[in-house]
Amino acid sequence: MIPENFEYHVPKTLEEAARLAVQFADDGKLLAGGHSLIPMMKLRLAVPKHVIDLGRLEGLRYIREADGKIEIGALTTHFQMESSTLLKAKCPMLPETAREIGDVQVRNKGTVGGSLAHADPAGDWPAAAVALDAEFQGVSTTGERWVPAAEFFVDLMTTSLNPGEILTAIRFPVLPDRSGDAYIKHPHPASGFAVVGIAARVTLDPKGVVETARVGITGVNSKPYRAQAVESALTGKSPSSKNLAAAASHAADGIDANGDLYASGEYRSHLAKVFTERALALAVERAAVK
Ligand SMILES: Cc1cc2nc3c(=O)[nH]c(=O)nc-3n(C[C@H](O)[C@H](O)[C@H](O)COP(=O)(O)OP(=O)(O)OC[C@H]3O[C@@H](n4cnc5c(N)ncnc54)[C@H](O)[C@@H]3O)c2cc1C
Image (tube, rainbow, N blue to C red):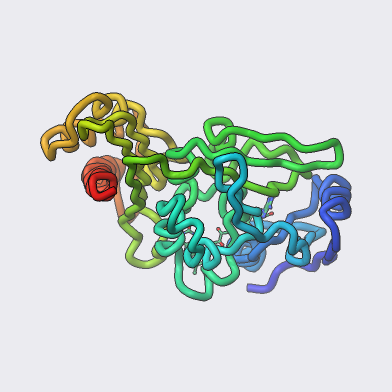
């Protein structure tokens, strides 16, 4: 339970952090909230020789609206997401997701950027990120770039961030008119992580027919995915219970579902369908009251 010795670096600016991240790309690790990295170091599943603490980069802690999108600094904590009035008004799926993460201590220290960069297959944020086609800003000594969610998650705990690249911000689209969204999960009874987590957003046309549906799923596969078969089955249909159930039945189509001691692949696929139906129903209900 004691990590290997390491050298601790505390950059004061993003430029300094980027330099250190590149210098120690092979044997260093960035530290954000530490709620995934430190347990891994204690278990010696991660043995970095250099730890680069991003914690002093206050400029990476913000939630703001820009160009019709919500932009979130990578060091924003789960608690800041949960309690943001801007998010509650403009992208309510995000505070709803934050509320589902761990306990008060975890939400107080853990960060959105750390969680997304960690890409835990049972993490909660990835569902919202893929459902809403979030964009990820990576910064390195050579410059910055934006990566769409569809390209960000590569595999189990693997993202398309380059070695030494720092995730600095994430952008989400705001909730359009006549829309509702929801995040619900089936938590693992011991860890609280998502056995299945479903992020859904539905936009209705003026007649109440589904104009667009977006569904992101975490926990089921080695990486989060958009359930496009569900989305296309619902688009152009009335959001009746029958149509929601029929669309949700496609939630695990073509997916090789993870199995473990708690939930077999078959059970996870079943949960994905049940929770997709519930998340869609909630999103439709919220869209209808607008
Ligand atoms: C008891 C407990 C319960 C939890 N329950 C849940 C849960 O229910 N749902 C859930 O989703 N999560 C849960 N978590 C995980 C928690 O959300 C972590 O906060 C999160 O996974 C990692 O964020 P962090 O800021 O702590 O990152 P860290 O632990 O500091 O870092 C995680 C990884 O990301 C890298 N990294 C961090 N920041 C950046 C960056 N800006 N750019 C590039 N790489 C970066 C690090 O190098 C490291 O590899 C739980 C954790 C604990 C300890």
